[in-house]
Image (cartoon, rainbow, N blue to C red; front, side, top):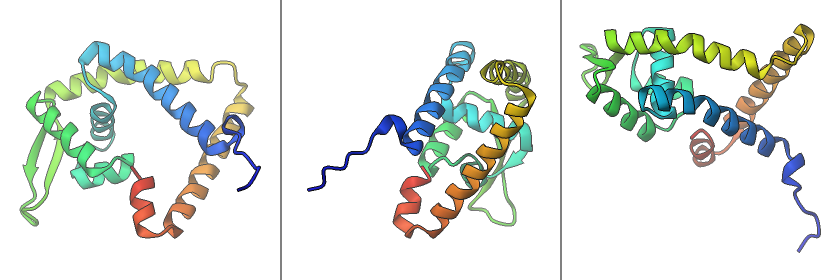
Length: 161
């Protein structure tokens, strides 16, 4: 047995995950209070607001959500009539999803709130620090994708959730 210990407070993957969770929870309190939905529903609303029409599979790939989370959130949003489904006539196994008028109203309402939240996060940074952070985040994302792409298939599915 090794005496080497993993110091979580200095371990970059742990710190990034912790930061992502804290930021996500902070933002989620806003849309949970206003609209009563959670992180998966918000990701779908935000993704469809940006890209207009996508399949559930495309949403999952873009937002790095497991297909069961996407499926549950899509079901909830369909039930609330915030998104609509249109069958793909080329492939009847999949459907195109888009925001309804009500979903678009919510998206349009939350965009400035989300943008203010993001601005508050980096309010103490100089423009140069913001640019540097953006560069570092992009590089970390690229490195993570490379590592994930080279991982065995079973590991990649678990890590991608």
